[in-house]
Image 1 (cartoon, rainbow, N blue to C red):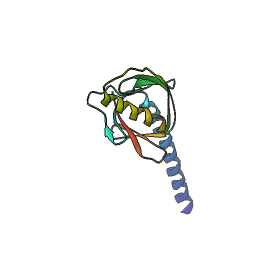
Image 2: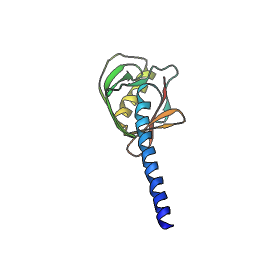
Image 3: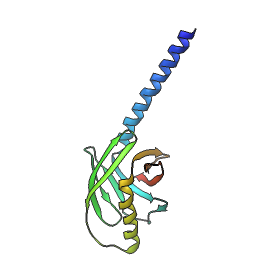
Image 4: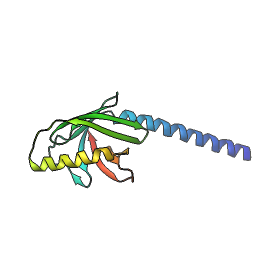
Length: 137
């Protein structure tokens, strides 16, 4: 009887481990593509803002900080995520967009993890705080 319970528990544990790995792999695939930035820190982005991130399969990261286009790279290992912006255009925009862009630029290097919640992509800092919320374009 004990052997059957131990075997059943072991199989359940193994199945849960396999399921977790599949979810991590699915998370990687779900990240790829274009995402509209909806919120940075505790402030929503300006209506009709062009702020977006584009994740490509080769690890390239491009997008728009709110006013300027940028490029860089990203790495993902399961839920762990690192964004590395490398360069950007240098256009001037209205003050509200420039302020929003400064928040986006400040937040991107602080991203340490990502999770999907209710169809949104949440970026988390090292303490687990949500610092950006995105939706698929």
